[in-house]
Amino acid sequence: MPNALTWLFLVALGAASVTRLWLAARQIRHVSAHRASVPPSFADSIPLAAHQKAADYTAAKTRLGMIDLAVGVATLLVLTLGGLIQWLSQAWSALFATGSIAHGTALLLSIVFVQALIGLPLVAYRTFGIEARYGFNRMTVRLFIADLVRHAVVGLVLGVPLLLAVLWLMGKMGTYWWLYVWLVWVAYSAALVMIYPAFIMPFFNKFTPITEGELASRVARLLERCGFKSSGLYLMDGSKRSSHGNAFFTGFGAAKRIVLFDTLVSRLQPPEVEAVLAHELGHYRLHHITKQMALSAVISLAVLAVLGQLIDRDWFYTGLGVATPSHAAALALFMMVLPEFLFFVQPLTSRYSRRREYEADAYAVSHASPQELVRALVKLYKDNAATLTPDPLHSAFYDSHPPAAMRIARLAELRSP
Image 1 (tube, one colour):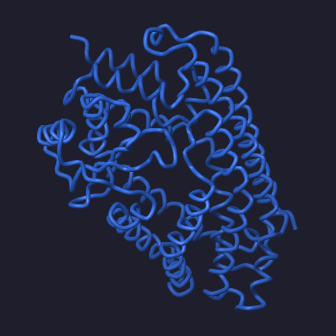
Image 2 (cartoon, helix red, strand yellow; image 1 turned 180 degrees about the vertical axis):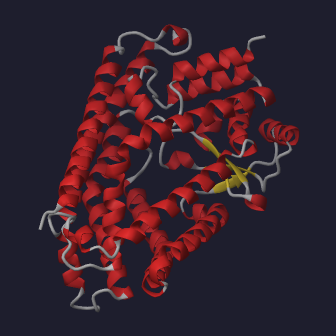
Image 3 (cartoon, helix red, strand yellow; image 1 turned 90 degrees about the vertical axis):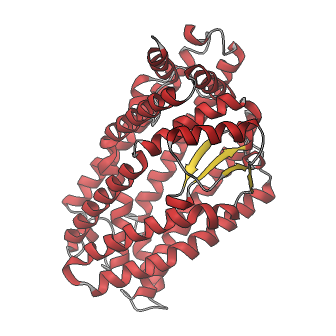
């Protein structure tokens, strides 16, 4: 039976979805309107053909995102108000006692499977359609399927024990179960960060140590200047899946690794790679990673506390299409509908992220050549077909990094006398 929560959910879903579609339409119009000419600040470094490719690529991805949104909204409505979660719960009740840990685990895994299965055609089209059309895809069908299997296996191995622990705590720890779940979640997240570089990532990619040559020497001197220690510099075979390039730090403590995509190394000169790494190193030295983990921990505690207040309310379940309350159903419903209520907070998180990018740029400029960082960024914008002219409002909502023109202009100010 519909209740106040039903209508509140529909209003939140409708408002968020309409806004997402409106922002996507703005992005397509804005990028297309500026397709004919390269922005003046990039006129000497980005050819018109590359700029137009970036505009077309951005528009194609945004259109696919609109389809993805429509499919996601339909899936959410079918699972909740359409009664699919309730049907799955009843189906698993034929094998497991309703409310048991086995029943809850089966229910949650089947919901994840349904969502993944529905989204698979769009994932495949993004890889073999859009990415291939614009020259980025290196993925074969065989590797695509192998990745699906590997992700499923890793997800089950890592996720099912956590799921079992959460459901057990929800059933045994009384009113404050959410606090115990939060403690387990924080510990699990920290452990995952530690083991991910050495034990999980090698399932998907090959990592080759870089110990000799100009690049290794430059990185070693950079780390020494910054007082940073890592477990090594590695080259990752990202080119077997995509021609996009990237670099990142991963892990904590003695497990810290510096990882460079082979596509990045093939396109940038060693001084440019050094400047990019100085930026990434800035995130660590300015404690952005630690602060992000702490913020995530606080937010997850608040989220779990709210769920702790809702889990025993019958109207919470019936308002979202579930007639048989259970801990697993509560988890599923809450995690699926929460993003719709929090959508309009996204500009704040995006702004916070962009500010950290500016701070990391400032750190990089103080430890590496600003000119090399600018050259590296321009090459990456060009090679990755990143639009130089995003819609300002779309960017404010979604972009974790500053728009290209604003970022380059800020770097120019930082390197000015």
